[in-house]
Length: 425
Image (cartoon, rainbow, N blue to C red; front, side, top):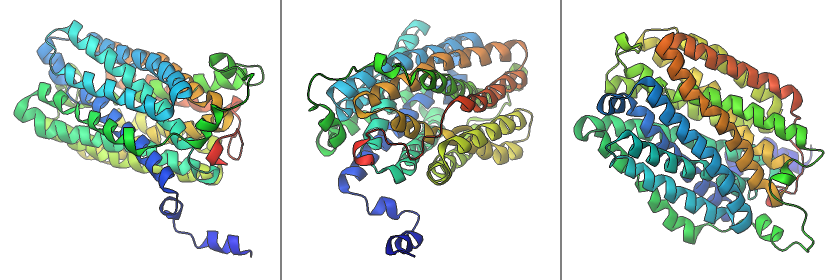
């Protein structure tokens, strides 16, 4: 056995992280904090949804529209900030997106009409959509190929931490100070931009791409849809649309489903019990994100995606049919594990299919075009829940998980592909 093989055999599970260059660690921390606080701000809405329905006199249909409008705005923001990240830098785009979603989360606490709340949610969504494209490209270009899945898995896992923090804040702040104060806490992520401004460098791969000799190859969406990659671009967009539809379809409504009274189709749980169920699920979500990163680096992206998606379908069907808090506490982490873990692989897949000059544009378009379709999810679930109950609504969502798995027939395995990811080689 070679010396390299012996060293690899004795390497600890986190040696790849501990021995990484400082610049790579800072990039990973920046993207993780941005994604964590993105989750924190966005999920505050779903966690206080029952109170908003009561205070604003909303119907389930109107509440669903608010969620859909946020996701549509996020889709637009993702494309815009993806272009900004390719043109002006990953760090600058990251700072801009964080400022936007932090400021307008806090502004939600100042609203008094449905129109005012809708405007704030749309502007919040614009910043939320931009964070992922810039952060994912930043990490993909500062970590080597053999560790890219694990690094991006850690970034994705921070979403679960942000969701858990949001649930904790709601459990502490909501009973004492009301839902407006909950949104005011959401301005805190703006402080992160101060460190980003001085502590995180642009990736060398991006800087090199700005110095390429003219004439430059075409950039932007026309390059993303260039012959030879058009089919895979379309299939990736459809697959991601299905995963985002399914994820938002149940995640945006699970807190409301748990806390709405039984005569309104919910579980009738108290704020503290609902928060406990949600917090427990985030443990499964975090483990799902991190494990997917390790598994897809070891066994490949494609097979892991299909297994996770089919298990997500099965576990959601079970979750939507139990009525015991104990069972919800047991099944919730399993659903969160499989129903979200696969997102860790998407940034790696797109980084390995699209080169540096168009990477953030591709990341922004492919991820956020999916949000256009996913914008239908809150509305679809609200309408079905209103007419037929949450059981049927969540069954429809589960079937979309299965459809996402089927679409992988047309998407290639990307582990090991070299697409000029800079330091990622």
